[in-house]
Length: 268
Image 1: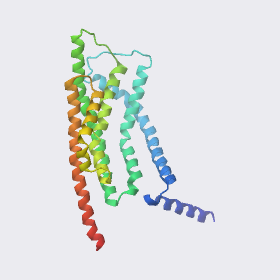
Image 2 (image 1 turned 90 degrees about the vertical axis):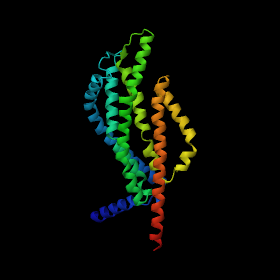
Image 3 (image 1 turned 120 degrees about the vertical axis):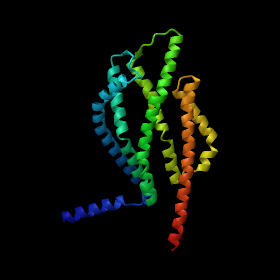
Image 4 (image 1 turned 120 degrees about the horizontal axis):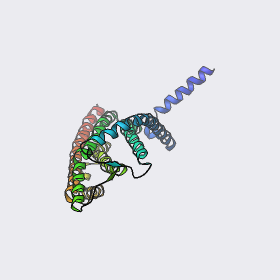
C-alpha cells in the first residue's frame, strides 16, 4: 500500500514538472521561480567559499600589477582591509556562478519556448559569460590606465601629493569594471529578446537616438569630467549598440526564415 502511494506521488510530481507554460498558474510560476532562486543561492554559498580562498591572491595580483605597483596603499579606516576582502570574495563568487544564474534564468523561461528556440538560447550562456569577462578586461586594461593617468596629471598640475586609501582605489576599480561587464551583455540581451519576439531591429533603429542619449548619460556617470575619458567610454558603448542592431537583424531574419520553412512541413 505504501509503495503504491509513493508511486502515485512520484507520478504527480513528474506530471507537474511537464505542465506546459500556458497551463501553469501564478502559484506554479512562483514555486518554480523560488526553486530557481534557491538553486542560485546554494551555488552562491558554495562559490563564496571559493571566493574567500581566491580573494587574497586576486588582491595581491592587482596590487602587484603595473597599474598599481608604485602606488602606496593606506587603510584610513580600521575596517577597510576586511571590507575589501569581503567585497572581492563576493565579486569572485558572483562571477563564478554567472553561468548558473544564466542557466536558471533560461530554465525558467524555456517551457515557453519552442524546441529550436530552447537550443538556440541555451547557446547564449557561454557567449554571455565571455562578454562579461571581455567587459571587465576592457575597463581594467584600457579605460582605467587612461583615467588614472589623467587623474595623476591633474594632481601634478594642482601640486597635490597623491595618497590613496586601499578602499578608495578598489572602489574605483569596481565602479568602472563592473558596469562595463554588464554593458557588454547588450548584444546577447538583444539577441535573446529578438529571438523571443519582444524586440525587433526596426524598434532598435527607431529608438537609436534615445538609446544614444541613455548611453551618454551612463558614460558621464562612470567617468571623470574629462572629454577623452568620456569618449573612451562612450564610443565602445555606441559600437556595442550598433553591433546589437546588426545581431538583432540577423537573428530576426533567421527566425522568420525558420518559421516560414516549418509552415509547409506542418501543412504536409
